Length: 169
Ligand code: CA
Image 1: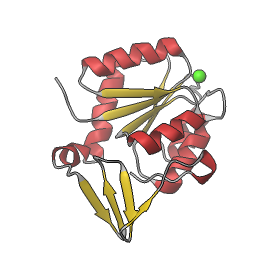
Image 2: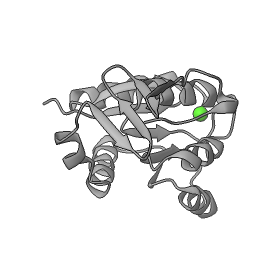
Image 3: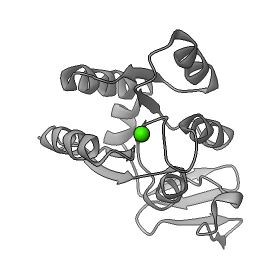
Image 4: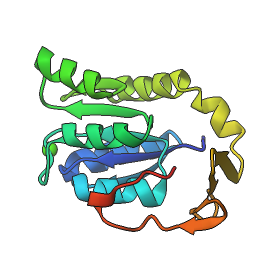
């Protein structure tokens, strides 16, 4: 049961990574992962995932910071998956722009249902079915196949560091 969605998992606990990865892949999702904020943002830029599952307790940053950085640039769906179960943790993450919040321990069926729900809400199902190789927005032309971005016909390079994070997809 293949679908077209690529999910980036930003999580430092390898057991959880392996567990979620296996479940997502069994359900047809392509899965990539990063074990911290820095690698996560780099993978966002280079792999253009359709959704991020984000742990908050990362080794190099608080996951809340990932939400802030991404939301400055993009409406990319983010589901927080955290051991922090306090109401204020959830409120903060949702107010910063997380689409959903799941506490550990979690059930995989619930996680899968929330992923489907987020994709539905984002109309990404339709987007995925109609995805074309190129996308034009304002003066930007994005070529998904070659991962190139052009601004006024000149290529924009997006392989620089986190400080200059710019989400081009
Ligand atoms: Ca963690």
